[in-house]
Image 1 (tube, one colour):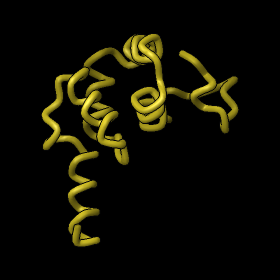
Image 2 (cartoon, helix red, strand yellow; image 1 turned 180 degrees about the vertical axis):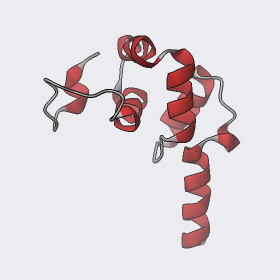
Image 3 (cartoon, rainbow, N blue to C red; image 1 turned 45 degrees about the horizontal axis):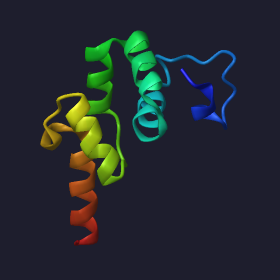
Image 4 (cartoon, rainbow, N blue to C red; image 1 turned 135 degrees about the horizontal axis):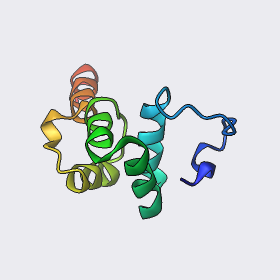
Length: 93
C-alpha cells in the first residue's frame, strides 16, 4: 500500500485494524488500483466491503458511486449515504 496516502501520520508502526476507517476512506478517495488490492490483502474483500459499508462517510459523489460499484454495495445501505441524508435533512437541502 502506498503509505503516502497517510502523509500526516507516522506510518512506521501503522495499526491497520485500529485505523480501518481511515485506511478505507483514503484508499477509496485517493488510492490507485494497487492500493485497492493492498487493502483487499489486508482486510480481505468481504472485510474491506464491510468497512466501506459501515464506516466510511463523507465521500464525494464520484468516489461514492465508484465504491458502490466496485464493492457491489447497495448505496442506500451504506453509512455514507445515510449520513448524507441526515446532513441534508438537518440543513434542509
